[in-house]
Length: 83
Image 1 (cartoon, rainbow, N blue to C red):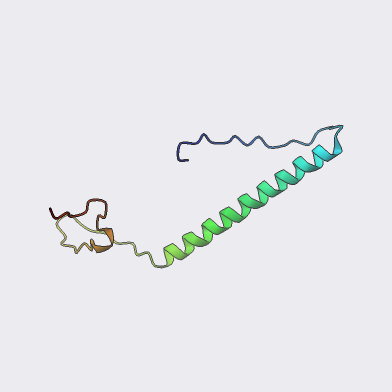
Image 2: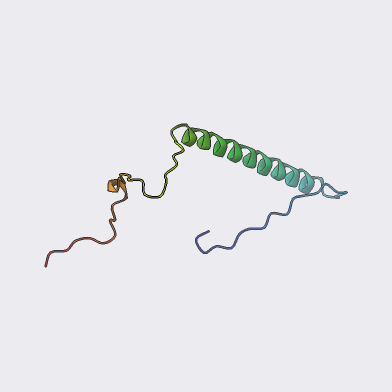
């Protein structure tokens, strides 16, 4: 994102590691990553539910007359200048 390369996450597989501290640390890291993924997905579901509450599915046919509100989408990048 924003020009950065995506970090590759290789999950830790439990093995016969001679360094118990390293093994514990990597297991704790995997638990944290799994917990973060769970909470992120839960939050995304909650946000989608709130967005879908106010969403209305409308179907238009060719030739229907509709009003389009453009005020919130006013372009701010090109300012009118007075010389």
